Length: 132
Length: 260
Image (cartoon, each protein chain N blue to C red):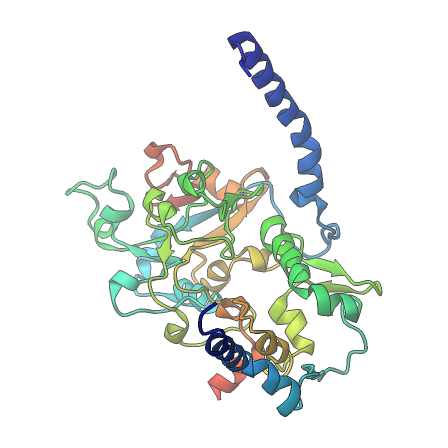
């Protein structure tokens, strides 16, 4: 190889620059183990399904609710604790989780997803703030 | 490898048979029936075998500047109000007689019929053309006759807008939210690129309430009920009055009846 030294040095510099974000996060920022912590503001002790399940699969769960209500006209859900509730994002979920920015957005922002739920569904609190 | 015609046909036939055979079990696994949900609640909701509405145009005519039903509907469902008629979203609105009943209009018609606007909305047809053209099944006819919409699934192709002979479907050309005067959080808004229309207030029926327009009408001009039930109010009204339907000749079997 001609100019091996120059090429290898160049490659090392290139790799060092391109991996800066990783090094920065791991060594300098001190936030490598950052975990978003959504705030709970409800007096309710238990969600409609076990917390682990909700954390991992709330998106599928909400899609099931959506299909059930809109397409099949079934609107009541029996929670795993045996309570009967209305299947509704705005009227049920956000009754307890009325702090969208401190609950939903916490993780969604962290992982860089932007679900389009709120393109249409209204956050009750948001409406109250607008009408003030 | 060479395959002669006979072998090719045999292979194709058995492949098709295999496809059919695994189709049913696959559907059972992947289909909507696999959703884990609860049986419908029996107490509360209003149910019918066939929902229908009767509009008493005689009563509407007497108070032709009344907009109670329109305001109630549009408020309940977060329907935006655009000043530009090209952007207009409407679930229930007033139409000139010649527009609502083009096949019945003639220049010597009773003057006040010709002059006064007719209240029109989605006809919840028994043979809805909008449902047939929807490529995503975002709109469909429920068993109780309501032509329902799933706004989650609408891709905004506007085939249904073109197919509906009544102009009952509106397309959101712009983001509707800034144009809604008073937001009602219980009901969603729609987003840009989605078609919307009247759903016979199916979300209110589920709670045991009559449609918002019927409830709002002070003049008892709107009647809502079960067409399959011979004792229902709509059936009684239909048997006692001469009624017409919009563009019934098109074969859509509309289910909004008008007393003229």
